[in-house]
Amino acid sequence: MKLLPTFHNHPGKSNHTLSMNPSASSPRPSPPFTNGGEGGPRPEEQAAPLCASETLWQTRRAFTLIELLVVIAIIGVLAALIIPVAGSVGRVKKINTAQAELQQLETALENYKAKYGVYPPSNGTNGLINQLYYELEGVTNNNGTFQTLDGNTSVSASAYGGQFNGAGVLNSSHGGGEDGVIAKNFLPGLKANEINYATNCPAYPNIPYYYLVTSVGGPDVNYQPFPNSSANPFRYVNPGINNPNSYDLWVKLVINGQTNLVSNWSQQVQHNTSLP
Image (cartoon, rainbow, N blue to C red; front, side):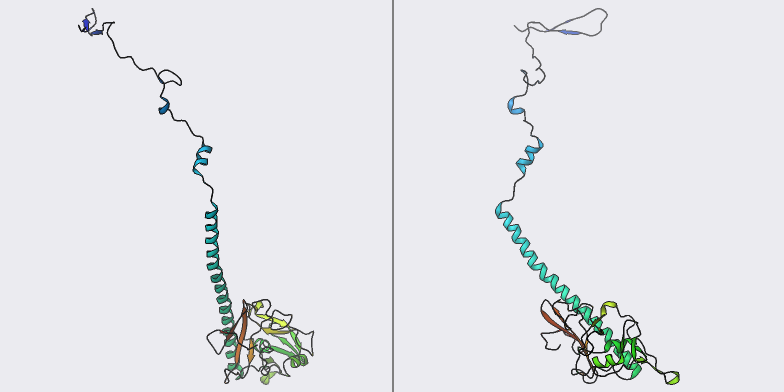
């Protein structure tokens, strides 16, 4: 027989109290979770914490030998592609610089001709040893000594003639009055690295002679047109062989062992030429 709950009314109270038969069964609440207690979580529900070092050790993996070899091979391929490109860019830059400097000299030569009616004289057909620097810079003639207008150098007329086949300097200040001639500097923007010298005159071995040079040098260090000198001068011949009605002007660059000829008779750079 099933027992039913009974309600008792208490005086002064409006609510009802539910009472149960103490012998009736009722669900007992589960005790709170405790570590090791009877009502604690089951072993499969309790996760063991991992420390940070254990987690990194499980997720980090060292490179294998094959992976290292693949990385090294990729680096080698990239280097093989980049290094030649960088060398080609450097070569083009040097050639472009020499071409710009040659055009600067061409402008000066045309201005020289506009003043004197002729192009500067050359040292015969010896294009390497030429007096172009003295003619385009202009000199003063002081009692047989040529002093350049830029104040860079001076040389006696006898030593000058000994180096340049007895020639004088057309663009020189001399005389006075109405018949006097005033020299002109046709290269006012000439930079210091566009001038160099060599002591290469057998008759005057201790006298420096100055030349118009390319600022890029040889550029190979073992290319020295003048022995024991880093000067790489512009070559000049008047009248020219390639330009018989004017002049030949050129410079030879040796870049990584390859000859590159920059000239005023060809827009294209020539290679492996026999010209000095």
